[in-house]
Image (cartoon, rainbow over all chains, first blue to last red):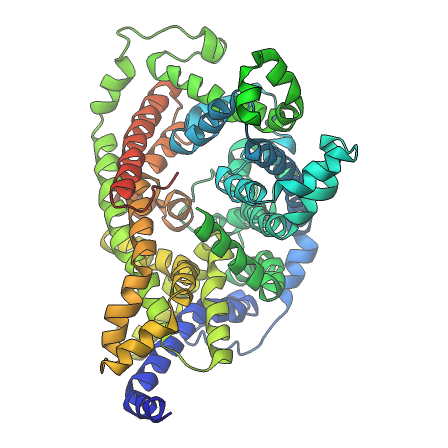
Length: 293
Length: 310
C-alpha cells in the first residue's frame, strides 16, 4: 500500500508529460481529418481566398450535393460494395478450404503442398506476368478482374490453418464413427469451432477489398466498373495542374478542392462508421496472428 | 501405430483413403498454380522479345539471351531507382521500426483506462485507410493552401509548396508512413507487454527500481523478441516499401526523388511505351534479390532462436 502510494507521488511529473505527449499525438492524427471535413464544406472561392482553414465562413453543402447529383461517385460506391461482398466470399472460400486441407495430417504429398504454398510468400512473378495473365484470361474490363485475382492471402490462410490444427480430433472422429461424412464434419463440427478466427479474416479481407484501387487501375479501362477508391483517385489527381499517374481522360471535368475533400469524406465514411464497433475484433485478429506466427 | 500401418499400405490406397483432403486442397492449390506459378513461368519473358500477337509462349527468345538485362544495366534511371529502393527502405525502417515501440511504451505507462482506449482506437484508425484517402488527407496539411502554410503565413512567412520540393518528399513519405502504421503496430507490442508477469515489476520495485529502470530492465526484455522478429521481417521486405504510397503521394515534379524499382517498373510499363521483356527483366532481378533478403532474414531469425518466420 505504502509502496504504491509512494510510487504514485514520485511519478506525477512523468505522467503529466506522458499525457501531454500522447494527447499531442492524438491531435496530430486527428488534424488532417478535421481539415478535410472543414474543406469539404467550403466553396472554391473561399478556399482560394482563404486565410483561415480552420473554419468555413459560409459553410455549404454544395460539394456533397455535386457528388450525389453530378458525379459518378454513387455508381462507384455500388461497384465497391459488389467487389467487397463477392471478393470476400471468394477469398473466404479459398482460404478456408486450403487451410482445412493443409491442417490435415498423414496424407501423401502433404509436404509438397505445404512447401508449394509457402514458396509463393517468398517469390513471385511480379507485376508484368501477373498483368499479362489476367489479360490472357480475358478478365480485363470485367468485374471479375477485381474479384478473382489477388484473392488469397497466404498469411491469413496460415492463421486459420493453425486454428484448425489445434482443434481436438476426438469430436470429428466421434462424428465419423456415427456415420458423418468428411463434408459434414467440416461443415457442422470443425467450421463452427473456428468461427471467431474466420470473422476476423472476413474483416481483414473486407478492408483490403474496400481499399483496393491498383488492380482496378490496371484492369478496368471502362470507368463504369470503377470502385470508389479509383474514382476518388481520379478526382484527387484530376484538376491539379500537375497530372497524376493516371493519364487524364479527355473531357473529364476538373474538381474544386472542396469537392475533393467531400469525396475523401464519402469514401472514408463506411470504414469510419464500422471501425469503432469492430476495432476490438481487428485487435484480436492481429494478436492471434502475432501469437500463432 | 496406426501411422506406421498406414504407411505400409500402397500409395494409391492411402491417397484414396484421404481423398477428401485433396478435394479441400483443390481450389486453393489450383488458384495458386494459376495466379502464382503461371506468372513465375511468365518470368521467362525477361529473356524474350515480347510480341503481343505471340504472347508469352510464342514470343521469340532474345538474342543474346540476356539482351533485356543489358538494356537494364545500361539505364541510369534503373540504377537510380535501384539504389533509391535501398536508401528509402533503410529510412522506412529507421523511422517506422522504433515509432510503434515508443508509442507502446508511452501507452503502457499511462493510467486511466478509458482515455487510453480512446487513444488506441484513434491511433490505429489510419491503418485502415487506403493511400488514396491518405494522399487526399495530407494535401489539406501540406498544399500551398493547406494548414501548415496557413501557420507559416500567420507567423509572417512566405507560402511554400512542400509537395514539389525534392528534398522534402522522402521525409514526408516516412512521416506519413509512421502516421498511418505506428498505432497499429504498437498493438503487437502492447500485446507482448500484457504478457509480462506483474511479479517482475513488483520484484523490481522492491529492488528500488524507478519507472525508467522498469521500462529498461523489465518491459524491454519482455517485448524484445517481438521487436527482433519485426525488425528482421522489415529487413526481409526492404524492397517492398512504399509502392502504393508513392503512387498516391508523389507528383511528377518530384517523381525522380522518390522512385523505387516497383514504381519504375510500373511507370515504364504502363505510362511509357511498354516493353514487357525489359520490364520483366527488372521484375525478375527484384524478385531474386527480394528472395535472398527473405531467406537471409528467416535464417537470422532462426539463428537468434526466434524460431524463424515460416
